Image (cartoon, rainbow, N blue to C red):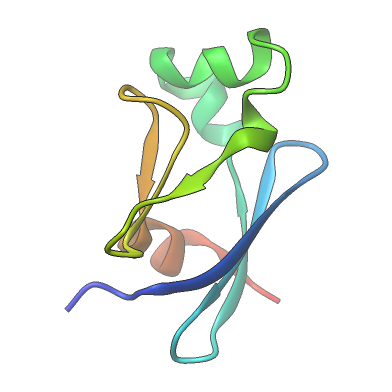
Length: 82
């Protein structure tokens, strides 16, 4: 079962603070994805895009547009516990 996101906050240096329904809280460094995934480069080049992150209705994905998204299981597994 995919972990569900309770809340999230885009913070400085292209990081996301994410709280899951089970209480786990992580900091995920999106800068790593910006450097390695071509579509994610827009988060750096398009002014204000990173701060406009959205949560899908199922609460299992944070996305910015139709090309840039992060599934909750990736955030849960690879985020640094806070």
